[in-house]
Image (tube, rainbow, N blue to C red; front, side, top):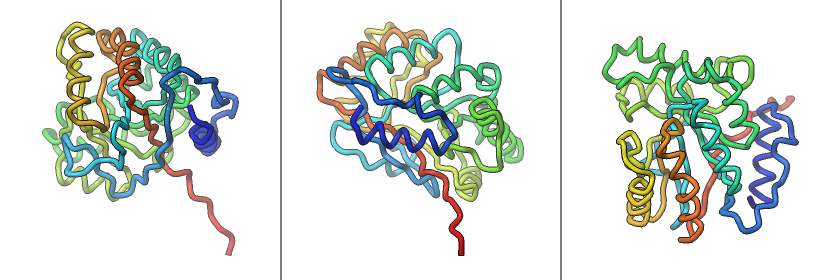
Length: 260
């Protein structure tokens, strides 16, 4: 991780009330590392070309690693270990009921320097296919559960206002609701299709072919899938070998009031 990336992560940690030692600079010589931290304004944000016309402003061979549906005690710790081994920072979009069941894992993700976003309370397939009021309630319950697991309390606004729709199942009304709430929406530019059973070797081949074709982008994995856990070390090694660089996304620090 670069000196700039470490400093940016430290500032984010302090703004979220996380102890500074968790973000101490690591010796990442010879590892893939995190090349830079991208501060992403969530207001009106809708990115990921699998769902929206635009994506993040990434340079060629820059990738953002994201994981959905966790945390899961059988798989998430191994994902965290593989990322730590290569000094890589990722973003985890949590299901609220899983976060509530395993708050220790949520806090481990944050302590390791990762970004924790939101993926609804119960993962309906999809939010767009249930009544609007129920969908909003499921989103809000998930935001609250994630923040309570991560920080001990949930407020009116999530600490990290990043959201991903389960199954990318959005609707104009729900997108407008999140926009009014100041919550950014993330899709993806490519995915590993790890919801389909396959060997880790087949999954690695598939995702690298897609990435080589795209050249950059937000990548979607699931930290609940054993095949992804087994593939991840080889995937990170392939990124390094092919000259890809990992970008870590974070929200802006909270605004502080200025005395008149």
